[in-house]
Length: 528
Image (cartoon, rainbow, N blue to C red; front, side, top):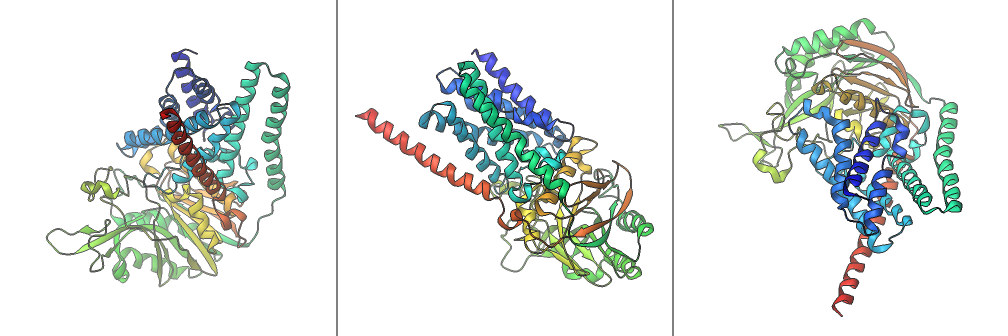
């Protein structure tokens, strides 16, 4: 195979993966997305010239650029994001190639890709450069009736399914080239069964599933504030009163228990030790006194003083010409007639809300050019908020992309999930549409209804099967009301988390040990 043919096949893999991606893609393409790249890898493993790492990088760069080009609308750091994501994806593919070549250089060695890739996806949830957006199992958000079994496996089950089918189809192609008719037939039957059986099983669950829990009436507000030209300049009363309470008021009924608004909807800057002095909170308390059966769940920017002796904490921000330090939070607030509960965002967007500590010279800045300066202070663990006999999970923006994180809320008793987000940074692009899709996955994994409020983009409601009950249009102030079921049963996935990915990680560690041992033994033999 010539060099240009390898490059073209690598590009083809990137195009196929992109063509499968929500919200405009055709998801079954993902079952063949890696096949061209696997074909290239196999030929190189068998002695042909070529650099697997760089060819894999071509595939993943194409995929990242086509599916997430919209990041550029939010930050010039998009270039670094694309390059880092590409390199991080290419690394497990290269490690798989080396391990396969050294330990079992045959077509069945291709199955080693599964633990390496799933380990990589697990790391995207935990390391500093958190970016689970393109984890393979996310692709089926547009086909919720296919993935009802995510309540047992989470998104990692979808990744395992996709990798397995790609490898089997690659092996079928390889047997066709090798003219192994008997093996080809067997592999074909196995592959068809492994594609169809999970879908049939899921459709059976989907059609027979009955929602569980008590009825809860919820309103979502889409305030439609321009984050670039208006959010940080407009009078905060205009945002909190005119665009939130006035939108919600016409929909209020005696049964309404929650009104949900977006991330950062309150831009007053609330000091947590002086809640009673906040004019925004005073207004919301007054509004809730007119509707004492309900609570307002809304995003806001909050501050608190750094305790003495903690001035060296990386998120601590110094006040010029003083000896005082403070923390800045991206918070979710639950406001009733008198009290305010809050939680602070934990899963921060890399570069935008969190600067790695090794980049200390950027401590007081971010790649959003100063709009959100420095690193935000996070909560050490997710915690719920309670009101009216219900326990609420309030996931803030990027947190809704983290299945293993969101399931911690339901494991701790949350019976409803609220997503508070600001998708206006990206403009009218696929970004806000893709983000909307993640709520479907969280609904299925946890069997929880989801109420989602976006600053603009898409706000709406999801039932426990992941169906969209209502959604708003882009760039329109709006409010919607829906009756949701508050489920208290905990799914297998919510209890056990990403166990498939952890198993893959253990296998990967054993493979790396085996590879290292083999290399050492081979080196000793050569010296003899």
